[in-house]
Length: 297
Image 1 (cartoon, rainbow, N blue to C red):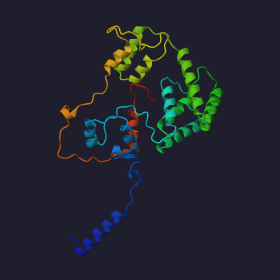
Image 2: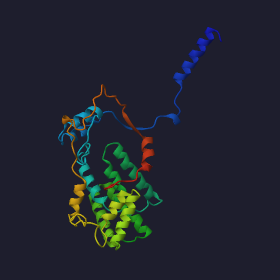
Image 3: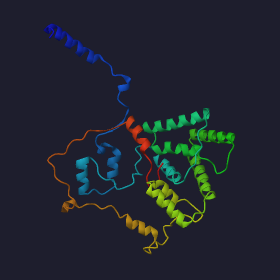
Image 4: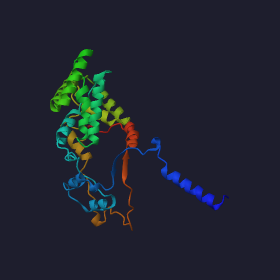
């Protein structure tokens, strides 16, 4: 072994090099989107809970997890975004249609469209507006009209609609898009036999494509939609809407005060680490998202 003086010198040198080394760029931590420690610390959470009656089971869930089941759609929460209600209304009306879109042209105009879309999503991250605005941008700008256009007409249309967007004429763009979608859905509606409709719907559900299945049901074919709410169900003799409601009863609140589904008592509750959502998490999960039953973007 080296003499004590040499060993001490070696240790000191190693310690110094460790503290002065820099982290390579490749090993830098990913961008942190947000951190969640306690849901009740968010103002929207407490505001939302004030709109519903709190039961004993809610108190238990809050004690364990910091939050409970919110028995509403959450559409009344705006996260301090003033015009969120308007954008949610536009989104709700637009996503119920199928929207064929133009591809952005390989030109300055196309780059301008992509840049504007990027700015819209950046505005969501900066909390200037909510996601409905960014999600509606491609639909309202790139939506194909019901008639065929020349290449020059397409570019003129896209430039005009992009300019209108930048001027803030959102409601007019949305109204025009809805009119185009409504006309397109009625002018291109094929006549489909009832048995074929059922077969298509069953196939889509079997493959897990619930969004496509529901859109197929609610598409305006020549025979209208598959089943109207007032249509009488052949098995039960009741209106379809009543049958569906019977299959989705109201949420049941467990009565834990009478030992019904009472949560176990523990000596202590483990303290979880804060939930961190990083840029890499979003990149890994985004390609795996497919869609769900109901209006989605």
